[in-house]
Image 1 (cartoon, rainbow, N blue to C red):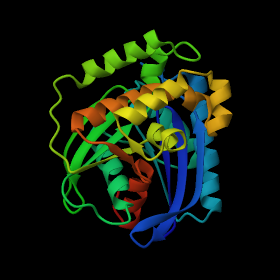
Image 2 (image 1 turned 180 degrees about the vertical axis):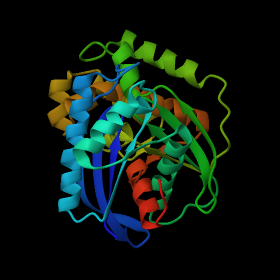
Image 3 (image 1 turned 60 degrees about the vertical axis):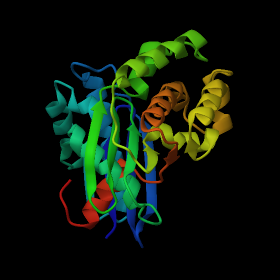
Image 4 (image 1 turned 45 degrees about the horizontal axis):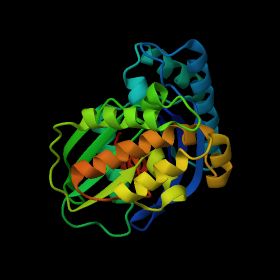
Length: 290
């Protein structure tokens, strides 16, 4: 069955249309728009509500034109914590005909884990960790391919929220980056993570890093990437790496979050091909409600 997921996040609104392809999924259509909802608390402004509703409607139309038999719209941290989230969900339903599922922290963690592990060419053995860095939250999830999630934790901090708070220069200064490091260190202070055998990274920051530093994230590659992003302005880096200007701006914060999570796990992170949207579509294929 051809299915679609529209993921309304803190940084972006993203569409994926896919169908089964053996163990994995075959991508048929993907779209992304930077509809930043960061800094909208406690309530999302009316103009932003209208913008997001319009974008979801456009992506829903594309999904239907691509032959999607089922379309699910899900929302994460920025909407989860907004006082007027019901207003946004109602505007989206009116514009697109889709009922938005506002994911809990636990649901977001489970779907990110499912999307990462469920789209690997082979099911991994042992305990698997998945790190999902979004614009407004970060999840670390542990479990097994057969048994699913056994442990998860969510932090109300993401690449966008950190960038908005600390990374004001273009490029960011060493002092700004150090303040991000200190904030991340304080966030993860005292965190005890189950021992894992392998770890994966998902989310917008992780996906973008393939073009910048490759598929494996460890202390060395992440520091190389941070240096690269602090040596030139976003306008020069965006075309070089074929990334959106806004992604370049928030990426150093995302990288430092991923690096801290890698250190907490004691493992390098391999960038997974699947994440939250793939997890939703795998649930759709099984006939399960998100």
